[in-house]
Length: 136
Image 1 (cartoon, rainbow, N blue to C red):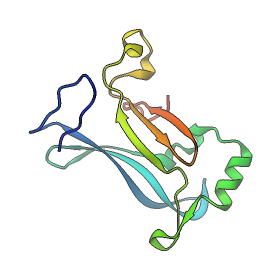
Image 2 (image 1 turned 45 degrees about the vertical axis):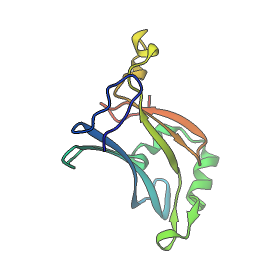
Image 3 (image 1 turned 135 degrees about the horizontal axis):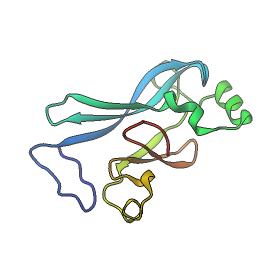
Image 4 (image 1 turned 30 degrees about the horizontal axis):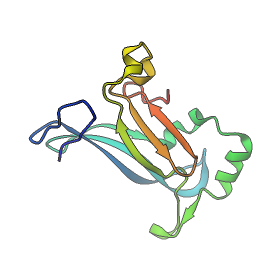
């Protein structure tokens, strides 16, 4: 399966694929409870993982208030799946930005390779710089 980005030629016999997935892990900077963490993976046509972004590794970049951090620590949106996991961000969609007028006008945050995504739990839309992995 290829990946379609507006104004880019879709591929049916090669290219790369972006996948939104989950990883079960612990990150005590967020909570002492097990987390169902969001992960973005880029794979080659052959299935080799060539890039991975793990949401919890960027926790401090979100600049949550101390009150929000305290709430997340006590209850990171616990779900019964997998024996009880905290679905703390719940990213529901991702997309490569692709060609766009903002980048063409000089705004480097909107580089066509960057990834835009939305989080249901944090109620945010964010852009991740594909090169650095940082939120821009």
